[in-house]
Image 1 (cartoon, rainbow, N blue to C red):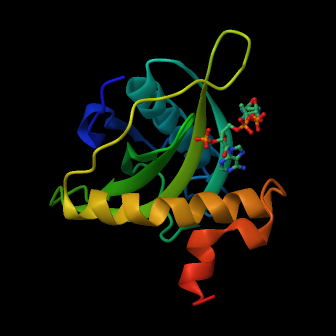
Image 2: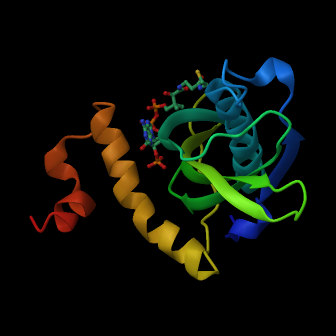
Length: 170
Ligand SMILES: CC(C)(COP(=O)(O)OP(=O)(O)OC[C@H]1O[C@@H](n2cnc3c(N)ncnc32)[C@H](O)[C@@H]1OP(=O)(O)O)[C@@H](O)C(=O)NCCC(=O)NCCS
C-alpha cells in the first residue's frame, strides 16, 4: 500500500450558520458543529484509506469561541497519523469575518476513525508521511493521544502506555 501525505485527504467544508442550528444565545449549537466535524473527518479518513470508515472515538473537542448566527464556517479535516487500521483526524474550524474576510480559528477536534471491510472487520490503511511543521508536530503527538484514548476507553492498561510514561518521566 502506497504511503500518502496529509494534503491528499484534506477535506474542506464551508457553510453558513442558519437559524435552526443555533442555541438560545443565537450561537451555533455544539451538536451541529460536532456533526459537521464528524462528516468532514469521515470524508478525510475515507480519502486516505479508500475504505468504509467508522468513528471509533472523539478524543478531544475544544469549543474555544462561539460562532454567531449567520457566520460563514469552514471545517478543515486532515489525517494527522495513520496507525495499522486506525487514523487520527485533526479538525480545525474557522470563522470568516464578514467585512475583511479574515479567518479566525474558532474550534478544533481530534477524531479516530477505523477502516473496515464489508463485515465491519478492521483493515490496514496506508502510512502517512507528514510534510509541514504543523503536520509533523501533530503526527509526533498522535501516538500519545491514541494511548490516552485507549486507556480512557478501557482498552489499554496504563502500564503499557509507553508514550505517556515518557511524558511523565516514568
Ligand atoms: C471501531 C471498531 C471498528 C473497533 O473495533 P475493535 O474490535 O476494537 O477492533 P480493534 O481492537 O482491532 O481496533 C481497531 C483499531 O482501532 C483502534 N481503537 C479502537 N478503539 C479506540 C479508541 N477508543 N481510541 C483510539 N483508537 C481506538 C485500535 O487501537 C486499533 O488501531 P490500530 O489497528 O491502528 O492499531 C468497533 O468498535 C466498531 O465498529 N465500533 C462502532 C463504530 C461506529 O458505529 N461508529 C459510529 C458512531 S456510533
